[in-house]
Amino acid sequence: MKRFSITGEWHGSRLDRFIRASFPGTPFGVTQILLRKGLIFLNDTKASGNSRLKAGDVVAIDLSEFEDCVRPAPAAPPRSKRKTGIGRDIRVIYEDDSLLVIDKPSGLVVQPGNQKEKGSLLDLLEDYRRRKTGELPGKTRARRNQDDRQFQLDLRSPNEETAAGSPESGSSGIHFPYTPVHRLDRLTSGVLIVAKTRVAARALSRALSHGDVRKTYLAVVEGIPSASKGEISAPLATIKGARSHSTIDAEGKEARTVYTIVKSLRGDRALLEVSMRTGRTHQIRAHLASIGHPIVGDKEYGAASSSGGRLFLHAWKLRFKHPVTGRDIAATAEMPDEFRTR
Image (tube, rainbow, N blue to C red; front, top):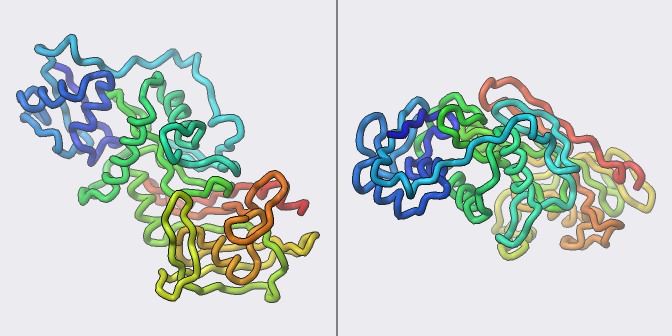
């Protein structure tokens, strides 16, 4: 009989997902047979695959009939062989057991659009997580995409009980994937929050949806706005597609953007400090373009292309409450050098 103690990172997850993660090389059909035969127990009671786990639960599996079919997760490599760092260009601004705050470089996509794309932030975070926790590689891209979809469903789960989360697996040997709780466009650089535990992910997602995370951006725009500061209040409608695009539309959703001119730059450009009172797709990009001052390099919204092809939009500062301790976190991603010299 194989036993697992459930840690906080698996709190609220389905039992069958935990089993698949515990035995990644095991055929799906074998897991279903184990469940149908009543060979999987939750707290000493025969369980169904859709049972929800809680921190402190004990999962037991009778493998007597399937020893040759069930393949457990591989053992961890020696600690001395682990590397540190996230890729080559990603600076860690803040890190603890619950979350990771990074400075995402321009040009790095957060999540791949299809299974053939490589080098996304999710790939780099998965590699970083494995090295931090000591887990050997082995999960396929399709499996990671499946886990990400399941995570989004878990966030909407009605089970909102809290439990102490940890990035380490404890006795279960299974880890929660390091998961960005919000998105930055591929060409946008700056501060991005990554949850290490399910508890942190849920708390941060709620904070974002309630407007409790304060975001401040820097943008270099074409032309110099006539007023030193202003607010753009115009509803936005998002046109979905291979590349989503937002446009001003009276029937769209409320959107409010506030800007202040930091300084005028050479070439009839201006550096702006920007914040949002709402959070819509491409809100800053669409709003600044709507007043005749598109962000430098934002060809999608009417600007000329920039040298190097970068978009001059940078997530500069984030302020939020720590999802576990409740203390204030202030994270700043230093302004890129090219913003200073333009």
